[in-house]
Image (tube, rainbow, N blue to C red; front, side):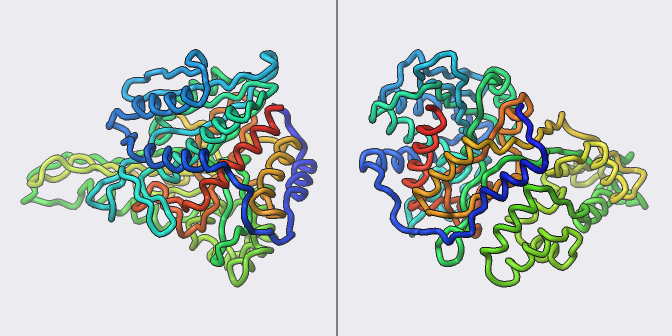
Length: 466
């Protein structure tokens, strides 16, 4: 991987930040055929129940392959590989020079589970209502898939001939093991770069206008820890001083009340400096103060109270699943909770585990790491990427600030960075933070962002594949 010095990297960051107010008007027109196709593909995509255990990822991959073939892709350039109940899809848009390093564009086909009884609408039936497309996966990550596929079909229809191959690489287990991403990254480690539709994007303000575009150039390390307690158990009519569930409850309460120390990096400082200058009121002031001094506790508290910012402030750990007991009339012999951590770059697995042990402060607790966390360095801010992104964003909001950021969550980009492929989150979603319900109830995306996302991807691919 090409590395840049801290001084050059920070200079590149500052050059990316434009404080010129965005000209938020009509975007260039996407052809009606492509626009309608993109909306229809998104609706159809939501209908595939691609959560773990449902077995519908292969069927979704076949549907996408059919759309690509109908749009001019040769059957031999599309490969669907089965991986148990899930699958990967790799499609090649062939370039003029087979020796040129390809560009990978990536997304994931799977979604987190959704229970019908919890949702206002059927999560797997797309509903267009009040200017939004509702449905599980609409934002994470099926609009990303659709906008890339629609852009590829548009380029095919125009007869565009890239110099280098464009490789569409779709995984089917990003929300679970991410084994697919690790495998594809290894296969495609000769790539020039990876563009990720599952990160980045623009935040809209309360007036509906974009405030800042976030380019994902780094991400936190995903770690799971299991905290467990064991006990001989016994009859529930004879409770004693020790109880595995009670012990676990105390541990969860202590973790819940703990915050890891504030951390910052060049990326997070640059982000808060740029966003703060364009955000009115106490929030903007807090961003500016935190960018200047991460030890400012008052600024930290203001930012930490907002889910869209808390992940930029340091390591976070939260309880996600729990299991305890074996019978309703017996004292529990075991109790465990999964603690999911998103770890700020530079912190080791052992340092996080050690902190959790100290916070829990119970010698009976067993704290073990689950799986093998995959860290990766930040991607260099390449001139070609920044220029191409600047041009693409200007098509949608001229002069909108583009700020490289660190993603709080883990994406498939982690694995590409780990094998030396520079990776950039360049989602086409323009959305207000209050509308972000990815992984939650009533997930949705604005209908108005679909055409812009397709336009953005077409521009990026035309420029970066030449």
